[in-house]
Length: 165
Image 1 (cartoon, one colour):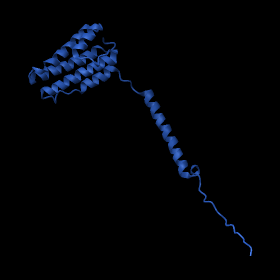
Image 2 (image 1 turned 45 degrees about the horizontal axis):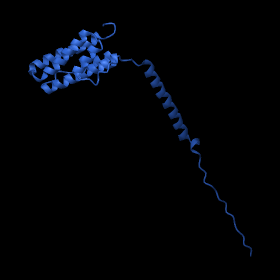
Image 3 (image 1 turned 90 degrees about the horizontal axis):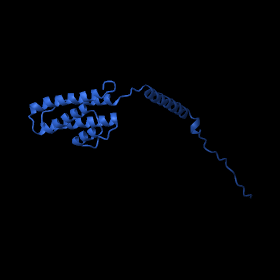
């Protein structure tokens, strides 16, 4: 007898490559369209985006301050803290003055040393004095004073807008 070895046909499993499938092709189309739409939106926003100036931003922030909810001295302290922070940020954005790290007194001195407009420095001095008087004032007086100081801050920004200086 012969030792005969039979060879069996061995078939490989055939799988269609992923890049040839319909699902992959649809995914690529969706991906390319998404990228095109995203780039279009970004280009549109960059080209037609309305630039907000420092004074517009600051005026919007000042107009957001609501004195109606202030019933205690602590509330008014927070309002004055926010008010002075907004003014310091405005001076930094508008004139590139290093005002963010200064206390209120240091800010006044710094602006005087920088030869800032004297009338505007006096307005800031009034605002600073009002924030110091919160500790001693009555609630009824605080609300009226805070309204005057908020108007003073808005006037300060309005006087520094180019063309209106």
